[in-house]
Amino acid sequence: MTAEAQERGIISAMDRRRPLVQYALPVIQVLLFIGVVIAGVGPLLWLVKSGLSTSQDIIRGPMELWPSGIQWHNVPDAWTQVQIGSYLGNTAIIAIGSLLSTLFVCTTGAFVLSVLRPKWGPLITGAVLATLFLPGVISLVPLYLTILKMPVFGWNLQNTFWAVWLPQAAGAFNILVMKRYFDAIPRELIEAARIDGASNLRLFTALIVPMSKPIIGVVALLTVIGSWKDYLWPLLVLPDPKLQPISVALPRVAKTTDLSLQMSALFLAVLIPVVLFLIFQKQFLRGVGMSGGIKD
Amino acid sequence: MALLTRSATIATSETERSRRSPANWLRSGGLSAVVFALPLVLTFLYFSWGPIVRGLVLSFQKNNLVTTPEWVGMANFSYVLTDPQLPQATINTLYFALLALVFGFPVPLFLAVFISELRKTGWLYNVISYLPAVVPPVVAILLWKYFYDPGSGVFNAILGWVGLGPYAWLNSPHLAMPAIVLEATWAGAGATSIIYLAALTGVRNELYEAAELDGAGIWRRVWHVTIPQIRGIILIMMLLQLIGTFQVFTEPFLFTGGGPDNATTTILLLIYRYAFINGDFGAATALSVLLALVLCVLSVVYHLLTRRWSTT
Image 1 (spheres, each protein chain N blue to C red):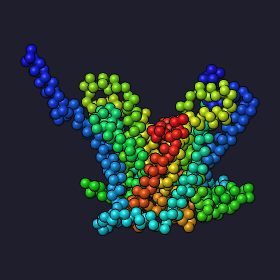
Image 2 (cartoon, chains in turn purple, brown):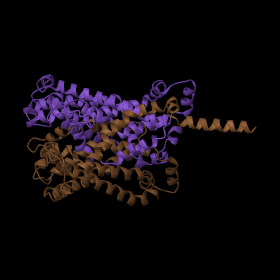
Image 3 (cartoon, rainbow over the protein chains, first blue to last red):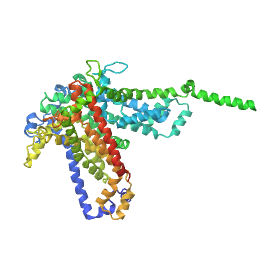
Image 4 (cartoon, rainbow over the protein chains, first blue to last red):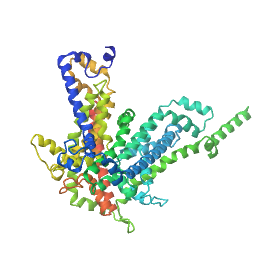
């Protein structure tokens, strides 16, 4: 009783005792739950079902369960014939590389802006913040040309994973989220470490990074899922099919693949992000909520 | 005595000078700050600030990567503005944005307000409704493309049970855009609702108590307390959604490729065609710059219009 009284929201304990609310609330709750399950889980269940059916079954009765029995061999067939394995491997390489480059840039950058605070720091913070407000479309084509020929160095990064890893790290959102977290670390801790004679590097590796594991985890998750979902950029900078991630490869192979194998391939492509999300759902949802805070 | 003060002034002026000297700056760790800032500055120079400046320059050039870039003034702008495809693409993009607002705005808000009332089971609704957002867009699109299949798709099968259809969905110029927006809404609603939920946790319960004491029922509490309290975030999400939908690419590209009969060609699709099919990078950036300008103006106007409501 006491806990409920404290945790009231729009509906109060008194409302809950009113008969209309008492009966209507569970009904709405159940209806909404059914709606959410159909929208959220339904398509994935259908994908699993179709991935284990014959093509004829999918075409003849898209809403029927296995009329010709469950085709378990579809999954290994997709793995070998559609080469899902190697595309998934590329996706993993892209995701891990993006993760490392993002974490490196956003932790070191936030460390300068939040802890070292040099005189020119606010200038950089402002310049990072400004990119958040500029529409991404303006840099799509020039970014592509930068990958074809890096200014000063003259390297061509097309058909190398660097073309995906490096631009990924220039994300203003990650830097600002990280900076906000570092800002909340008590200055006394930093001063104490300084008095003990810690250098900047030691301050970074032994104090700031270990204290920021939760936020690093959130940024890591959002980066991995984000790069797993990316399509247009890898399509542009990785024209070589041997290097393409699964999202770029799927529409290409879909044109020539049997429907049932196509569905198995889609299922394999969705498996890892969904499993990652289900394991780390708490951190993940907190991170997404935070992204609303930063845009405030 | 005079000597003492003199030596003291010399000492202070010396420390002042040494504080500014490069050696002292080095000793106090000024260099390591530069080293730590280097990854950030370099990646942003190369992949964020640089391309933005380069885009502005490129839009005034004739550039196809084969011949040497040539300064052409406003020619790119007049070319893309007089392209007969532009009016259709603009209308399609606006239509997409409008539909996305109509479909996609109320659902996450309703979901968030409802979930915020569930103390014990709210997380389950959250996880399930966020699930579509972790499905890679390409997978979702290929799957939905089959759902929309005019012959043996899932939607026509379900509608067939109640005697409706079959509809041509993506093959029909009238239905193609709503069908694309429906999928985009399905994919995006979860994330928006999580952001609203985060904002809703900030609404103080005393406000509800006060409203209840004043005799406000549940709906009036939602309308007069909840919505005004999160109005700021609602307005921002609306603007972000507008900016996002103006730059939509993957959905029309993979669902219909702009068809049927150019009914789903958006501005981003035009930019893609200019740059990566025709190889005309000048025209592509000119159109990008125009779109970005429109979006910036839109943001400012929107900000000015909504400032009055969000402060009261």
